[in-house]
Length: 248
Length: 135
Image (cartoon, rainbow over the protein chains, first blue to last red):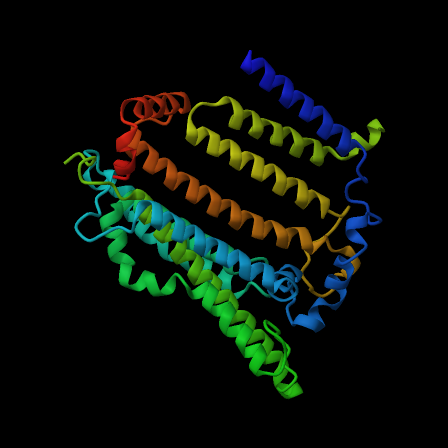
């Protein structure tokens, strides 16, 4: 009975949604309302106003900088929540199933991974630094580093992984994303503009493009490093097992 | 409601079907981890829908290179919003999974019905000791 009611509800919702979608403007039409209000401004004036060739980066970091600052705060709060629920991994207690598994990962996988991980990290550095010119940016690069840490941890176990990125290093770096935004925002205030402005009225015209580029790169690096460390810390605190669960 | 329009917007149809599949998973499955997977399917469908709204017929990536006019590019705004959305989705999933881990340690089961039953039994047996349940 409950099952049938749920099915009826979902089917009704599906019919309603399809009806709404059928009345929407046709997809990919240049006359769409979505393509006619604010996005032409972003596309036409973006380069001269923000100095970034990638329109997505200019929207994320310049036009909607406050949004992105809030987003960075959200992942920081997610880390804080995970740590409040599960606790950080502690010395002497960092055992996971992979460390005690009877089946060791094969030498082929281990050797291949040792070759692979530097390339993944190199790719993520490229993604972070090239974010204003090409597809990419801080979040994407940070996620790639986090993915490389997940692969490393599943193959080598938590003990090896937490030796390669020790906790002492991770704790200060987790706040880098929020800090980068704060530093750039205050720099805008000092330069005579408002909070989170990249164009500073007090700086001479000739220095302006270089300054905008460097501030963008600082924010991207901050987001990338901070995001990577937050993902790694969430993974480590999730994979940690209590001693009594571990099969010795 | 014009059917030709509906079939032209086939991306939207796919997103809506995906949304309903995710909602079905959230409602019908009893395993909490499967519920979280369903939530992620719903989030993905919303991302797909918004990205499709920004699509332009024959459009190019919104990156300024030589020979590409601004009018040829797709809308950059949904893409930026989806980046925000993906990060928020990851945060929600991480928090939910950490709570699931704690729940499993406490009760040893992930089945919603079993969890409700055990909690009801515990409340019946020891109503006064509920304060010390923390760990």
